[in-house]
Length: 312
Image 1 (tube, helix red, strand yellow):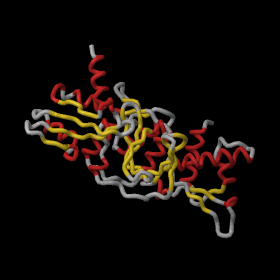
Image 2 (cartoon, helix red, strand yellow):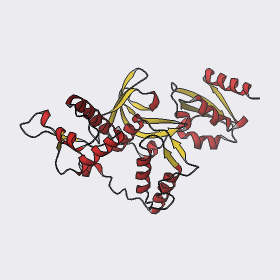
Image 3 (cartoon, helix red, strand yellow):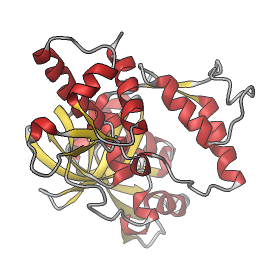
Image 4 (cartoon, helix red, strand yellow):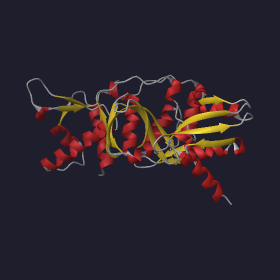
């Protein structure tokens, strides 16, 4: 029996039990654990940690007058089950479309897709409920940090991790996928502002910290995924971008009203744009052809000129 099957059986037992199960009872009921007491203890502790990282509300109950060795464990059904989100027909249709177009990689792929399809109202036997993913499906890589972050976003639970040599405490607001990588955005308590982190560059483990409901999410507009030029892992820099009068209105819509810093007499506009992906920003600017020009900083402008020089 592999670890995934053992974890599934463990979750099922902890949800169905009418009372907390002791460690000894778990060892007797769940196949896949070693008969050696020390090996069993190590495996069970690792399984507990992984379930909590994945967002399972594993509760430890120590009877009055007893010690940790007498602890019992359970997963309260009312904390585990997803309440009815109240989706309307158009939202259910969009969810069904997403379920039919996305395939998650890894051992937990099938379970995730089945859950998404169930939530979307798919029925057995139809294209979205058959368990098969079409040939045009997009495969999204999965990793333990992404699973932990996904649960933390849903529970509004803070997370701790190490990134670029610094320890971070973050209120996770949203999880995004861009160009083959998962990104976590949220409030960094050490820096006092929103930050974006590429999860495959987290050093060590990303772990939950504190109770659920520890923070309030920002409003809908602030919670939307960031633009592509913010979906990077470079040090943040402020670009100055000139756009001529013909295209200035379109640029203002794309960059937002706060980005405009100068209206020139000829109708052209200068914008200041915070970015962490120079390649994505370059692609955005190229879309304006000769109607836009990077004014600075010099390194960003030089990078654009060098890139254009390499174009055949």
